[in-house]
Every structure is written in structure tokens, then in C-alpha cells.
Length: 229
Image 1: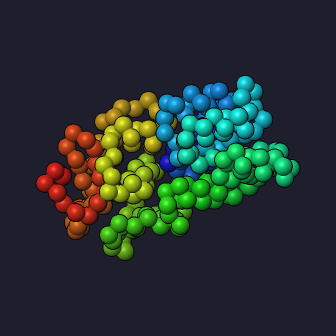
Image 2 (image 1 turned 45 degrees about the vertical axis):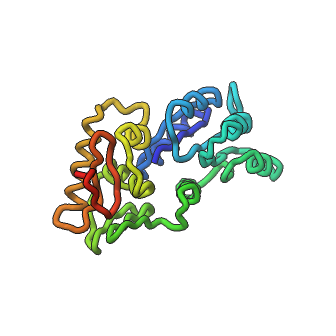
């Protein structure tokens, strides 16, 4: 999952980013509302953590902008403004949640998980397809009851595809969702991750779940078609 942090306090911004990266998220960081708009127009995000008091454009104004453009991005306000009126205003403008500083990072991570579950239409932490189960909280993968160890990026690719099972995912979509703007690799790495995932998930097992759609991308599903390889 890819998250945008919009926080003008650089130390706090960096600390949140480090915490999210340790939890397996891809993260982009910016420091004011105007900069955030540029990020939002250039990439797709699964959630945004947003401060209220910032230079150039405050968090309330930024949220009004993105909701006026019909962006349904989950937004969590993270701010020192703890008055009831402030919280009501943020929620009425379209925020999904509101967390007051100082805060506990475990609570922040739990609220992010809750927001993204609601957006994806899931009520729990388990994603399933046939006998494959992904636990997004414990970050474990099992198939047929056997645990499958994955590297962090492999897990990120699989989680994204599990949340979009049955939908063909392009290389560009994976690049946008799994890697941030600081990524300096090349798209061939994605083929490598997909190849390793296929071996770990499908080798010696039936039905096959990870399919290649020639010239388009990849899809997680149970059925075979003549277009898959």
C-alpha cells in the first residue's frame, strides 16, 4: 500500500515515514498542502495522513480541494488541534478519521488499517482466494495451511493483488502502488517479484492463482483461460 504523509514538521514527518516503512507501506512525504496536490495528481495512494496547520495551504483547504474533485482517498487528520469543533470540522469536510498529537504509533497503524479496510470493502485483516490466505495484520501468507515466507516487497505486491483479485493489474499500476518517488530501480524488477511470487504460491499446487495476461499485466484468480500463461 502507498501512503502520502503531509506534515510540515520535518522530524515528525520523517518519524511517521520510518514507522510506516517498517510496517511494509510505501511512503511519499511532503510538507504543505500545495505540494501535496502535486503528489496526488501524479500518483495513486491508498491513504493520506494530513496535518491541519501547514504553510501555503492548510489541511482543511487541501481536503476540500480533493473532495471537490471526487477523490475518495481515505484521509486521517493527525494534528495537535484537539477541540471538539476542530474534529467536527475535519470530519464534516470529508476526513475518515482524526487522531490528536501526541499519539501512539500502534494506534496510528491500527487506524490506517481500519481506513483502508473500509475503502477496500473488507471487514477484517484476512484476504482469501481459494486456499490462499493473507493476514495483513500479522503479515503472514498461508496456502493449504502451509506458511509461505515472503520478502517485504513480495508481500506488498501480493497484498495489492489480493485486494484487487480478478482484476488485471498492469506493470504501471504496480509501480505506482508499491514503489514511491524515491525508487530508482527499473520495471524489470517487477517481473522478478512476480516470477518469485508465482513459484512460491503456485509451484506444485492447484489451482494456479497467479496468471500473466500477455501484453497487459497479471491477475490473481482461480480459473484458467486461454489468454493466461
